Image (cartoon, one colour):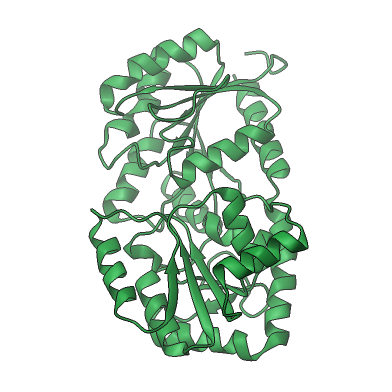
Length: 368
C-alpha cells in the first residue's frame, strides 16, 4: 500500500458517550483531537454522530461480519480496536473480532489494550487472545509494555499514554464560591473521590478513613449509584452508619466534576492495586493541579511520591487516614504536590496523544 495514501481509520470500540465507560470517554477525547479521517463502530445506545456508527447490539463472535461490511462501506484502510469495554462483556467473542475482520478484509489491525496488569487472570488471557493475531499493539503504560513485549517478542508495541477524560472547565470566582456553598457549606477540608465505582476502587476503605479523621473533613463521592449492585448497597449502608460528613452525589457531568476538582483540597483514589497512569481519574486530578492520594508502589516512574502525588504503602483505612492528616496538617506538602501535579499533567496532553496515534498509523501503512 502506498504510504502517501491518506489514512482512513475505522475504530471498533464497545462504548462511546453517553454510555458510561472509561474507554468510551477515551475514544471520544481521542476522536476530538485526531486530524486523520476516521469513523467509530460502537454499541447501540451511544450517540449517533457524523463519525459514530452505534449499531452493535451484542459483541459475540458473529458480529465480525457486520463490522467488516461497515468498514468496507466506509472505505477505511486501517482498523483500530479499543479494548476493553463494559459492553464487550467478559466472553471471548469480542476478542476474536480483529482476527476475523482482518481475515475478511485483508487490512492492517492495531489494538489498544487499556488494561492488562490490573486485570484478573481471565482478563489477561482475553487480552492475549485479542492481540495474538495482530502485528501492532498499543499499551498505555510501561508495566504492560514490559510484560506483553516479552510475551509476544515479534509484535510491534507502542506506549501511548492516556489523557484526562475531564477537561478543566472555566468557572468564575463567583461560580466557584457558589459550588463551595452548595457542596461544602461547613467550610471543611474537602476530599473528593470519583469515577466508575466498584470494589477495586477502595472507596469503602476511604469512607472508614474519613470517619477516623473527624469533623474537620468532608468527603464527596462523585459516582453513579446502582441499587442492584451489591457493593453499592453495602457502601451506602456503611455511609449511613458513620457520623462522618459524607455525600454520595451520584452521576455528574464532566463540567460538574471539573468544578468539584477545582474546589476540593484533596483527591483520594485508594485503589486495591498499585496505581498506573492508565487511570483517567488520576490524570484528571493531576490536570486540575490537585494533591492526589493513591496506592503505590507504581511502576510508572513519572509518579513520584511526595513530589507529584502521595503514594500509599497500602490502602488500609489507617494508612489512608495518615495520608489525609499529613496533607491537612502540612500546607507546604499540599502545595508541592499541586505544583508537581500540574507539571506532570503536561505529559498527557491530548494533542500530543493524537499525534502519536497518527505517527503509528503512518508507520503501519508504510509497511504494506
